[in-house]
Amino acid sequence: MTLAWVIGARGLLGSAFGRALSFDETTSFAPVERFQWSDELRLAAQLEEAVETFALNAYSHERWEIYWAAGVGTMGSTAEDLMPETRAIERLLSLLQASKPLMAMPGGIVFSSSAGAIYGACGVDVVTEASPIAPSNAYAREKLKQEELLRAFGAGNSNMAVLLARISTLYGAGQAPGKPQGLLTHIARSIVRNRPVSIYVPIDTIRDYISVDDAAMSIVKVLRGLARQSGVWMKIIASERPATIAEIISIFRRIARKTPRITTGASKASSLYLRRVQFRSIVLNENGKSYARSLTVGIAQLLSFERALHANPNRRET
Image (cartoon, rainbow, N blue to C red):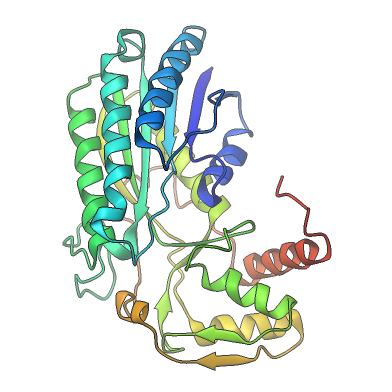
C-alpha cells in the first residue's frame, strides 16, 4: 500500500492528482489545517506538523509519495512573487530529510512545472528532454531553481525517486477564474455567458494542450514505474498533438453550434508566450505512450462542465 500526499490538492492539477490516485489502492493523506500560503511563519509551522503526521501515517504503508502541485505563480510573476514558494519547497525538503522514519522507507516525489516556460526561448521546432533549457521569464528561472532543490534532495537519498514533470498547457474543469491563464476555459466560459472572447495572441499560435486528468494520470503512472528505483528523472508531459488557436475556435464552434465572438488585441503579457510550442517525450516511455483524449472530447467535456456551473454556481467539481 502507498500513502500519497498531494500538496495543492484544491487546485486544478492537485485535484486531478487526487482523482488519479483514487483508482488504485492508495491511501490519501491531508493535513488537518489548510496551509496559509500568505503567512510564511505560519506555513513553516504547518509544514512541520504535517510532515510529522505524514511520517506517523506512513508506518503502516510500504511506500510514500508526495505530489507538489501548489503555487500561485503565473508566466507574469516576478522572482520576488515566487520566492516564498521556493522557501516553502526548501522547508518541506529539509523536514523530510530530517525525518528518519520517512528516509528509511521507499518514497517518491513529483514536482510539476511548465514546459512552455522552461524551454520558452530554446528555438527548436519540437522540444524534447534533450532540448536546451531556455527560460523565457522570471517564472521559469525560479522553477528551475526549485527543480535544483529537488535534484539535490533526490541525489542524496538512496530510497528516493524524484520525478520532475514539465507539463505542456493544461486545461480542465474547475480552473481558477482569478488566474490570468487558461485559454480553453476562458473561451468556454465566454460562450456559455454569451460574452466576447478576448484573445491577445495571433490565432496561428501553436500550443500543446493536455487535459489535466490525462496529465495527472500519466505522471502517477510514471512515478509508479519508478517505484523500485532511486534517483532523479525529468519528463515532459504533453499530448504531443499541437493545435493552433484557430483550430481550437473551430472545435468550439462545432460543439457549441454557435460562432464565438472573438476580439483580438495586444497586452503586456502577450510577449511572454511564444508563437509555436510543440513537445515530444523521449524518456520513460517503457510502458508505451499514455492515453491523451482528443481536443474535441476534452473541449466538449469542458463546455458541459461550464454550462452546468453557470446553471448552478454552487456546484463543486467532484
